[in-house]
Image (cartoon, rainbow, N blue to C red; front, top):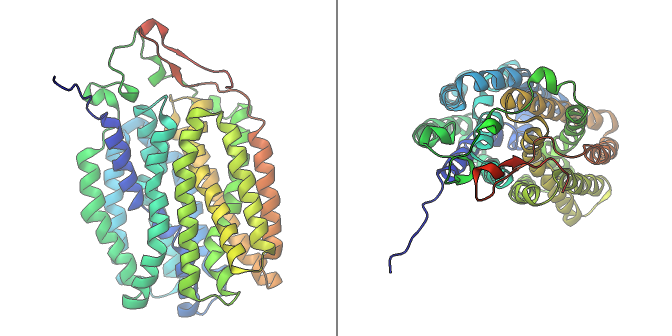
Length: 428
């Protein structure tokens, strides 16, 4: 008897391609490996932690300013073209690190310029593709996509640390740029497609035509979204949670070396945070497909608040690692939640632009949180006070997620006929 095997839905190849693009995107090297570069920059340029943290702050602020414009360009011209162009530019910029990073102001300039083009290889561009390929399994697809950053956050810190020890930090950046140009750029060019319609397919791999295709273009415009209560609740929650988890993740290596832990062991703690981030992204997406997403957000935010308290007041290495793990879970889940909640409360009509503003909030909060952590340490000589404040901020974020209310653009309910196609907007 012949076996009827259904081919793998091409959308999953798109999700895997997006994961690779994010793995070799800007976040693993400029965000999650920044704590490894922190002490290196301090020693080479003879400056304070706050001065070096300013490089990351500038990077995030410029990224945040570019994000809404990026979203508008993606909505207009498509994600694939913008991804290919900006990925090529980003890889080239990292190659020239070998020649133009001889002073702290040049480091600032380097982080600013990479921020201008890093959005093209980030979650906004890839996320705007995934939400069009998937509806009912959108959370899982976003989780697969975001695994790229999670794996990058796990692999890159110790790899970068080893490269720095063996060949220096400039070559570490240049090597990453080569990987972007040689691996990420060709694969994305070959496999990424903007929408399933380009291949004669429907979202989630549906095998029959629908009476209407209104859901692909349904949703709020940016001007409409900014006047809604759920949008501002999400933005404030993203800001508070993003500031808190970024500050902890990016200072974890310095935090642990202050306690007498070796730099290599502290880098492993950063990798553990990356593992947690990976797990947060792996499980938060499917959980949001199954359960009401704000409840999932509350759970991960509460865990992050607890982890920050453990980092502040736990004195053993084991407790510090446990706290870093909980913070990593929260950071991993938040990146998934931004895209998912934006699509459910604002729809797909101007998704990339609205997502750009929401993600910009997250990026700005990370920049300010990291800087505040450095300032707090410089003024008090310890991390306890800023950590206590960030724990409170994360708790407030959890409360705000609980106030969002039911979805406005829930997952479609597809029956055996096209006439049963409708949107669920009621809280599960």
